[in-house]
Image (cartoon, rainbow, N blue to C red):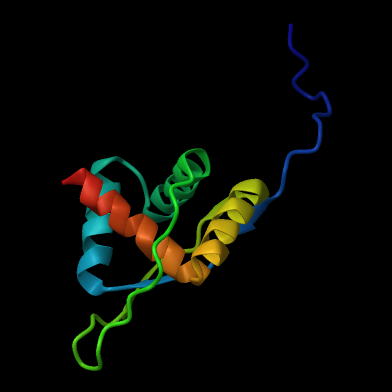
Length: 117
């Protein structure tokens, strides 16, 4: 019989990633996809980071749009909590590509939306 009050080993502390600024249409599509999968946007973002920790596909450098031609990042996606190792891997991959952590998260969302079509 298991001991329900046994002291468990220390669990790794989760790390909160930054809030993601993204274009309105992509935010709506991502929320709809998360809802379709039965997840909250926060859980869906955490799942994306977990998947990235396994795949580790490199990020692309950020392509800047010309003034008045680019999308405005006016919508916010929540800040997910992930394991520290996964957050470090994401940050390392973003640093290697020369992009911010927010841009890395935007690229993860873009990849997810492209593959869901």
